[in-house]
Image (tube, rainbow, N blue to C red):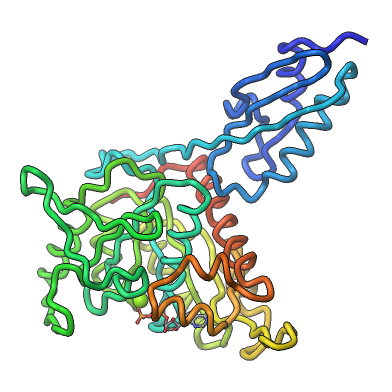
Length: 358
Ligand SMILES: Nc1ncnc2c1ncn2[C@@H]1O[C@H](COP(=O)(O)OP(=O)(O)OP(=O)(O)O)[C@@H](O)[C@H]1O
Ligand SMILES: [Mg+2]
């Protein structure tokens, strides 16, 4: 039986849907190169994120669709990725930044900054260009968590823009770099707005696939300034499993929606405990709460990150990459799985509607 032609292969791929975007790969512009040689087919599929959680199913479906044509001995599926820019009705002050993701919570201390760092480092490890903006001007913790506490950002040549600090493959900026260590700043309302606006507008990020914004706890001025200044693809809500924390998460979600910022999903942090000696899982704070809160809000639960000394130590020592490489008992997989589901959700949401900007 003769090998199929390129055109026949592309036609067959019109029958393969992206499992999250629910359109076929050809319509989505994801089929890039097709080559056929002596029954050997090679296709390049351009994903919407290098951290795509659906690589396995897409590979299987593409292989099956091509094999079904007959005359094919082997199929090589190669993945590349191009993060699509979120559409926005208003021009962005950061034209090189494709997607802006806020990480927030109703409550303090639930692990927003930890999740923001792990999301940024995880996305960067998958090959994306990532920036991390610490918008917690009251208690900036990103410099410590990224291991760059002593760093001092330089100014661009024209002295107009701040250059981020690169750490763990992530370009990072924080108010913590700009105020002397240990000093407490008393922020008045207009100062908060102006400072956060400056941080949002005046950093020379260059080209970024994702800008992760770590927000301060609560429902204050910073999310409002964020929503007014740059187009935001959506917010991730971090919560812990206790009932009171979940009520706060729902409140935080309501606030984002009032600001016209879409809620991408909930991440449950300090979820279960994995005993380091046996690997057995214990639910310290109850189970299923984040899923219930996500259901109530009609958004996905993007994953659960266990409470684990390795996470805390990485935060204290500024070594977030260790969570991915040295995590025991599936910690790294749990975190990376959560990061990938977030990346998938960003692709889905930005395909569905424009990023919000007021
Ligand atoms: N999954 C986890 N396992 C163990 N420790 C964790 C985990 N997540 C966060 N922590 C630790 O809990 C503390 C609080 O986390 P973090 O600073 O990320 O919270 P936050 O919500 O950003 O707090 P804030 O409201 O003060 O900004 C940190 O010491 C951090 O290392
Ligand atoms: Mg924080």
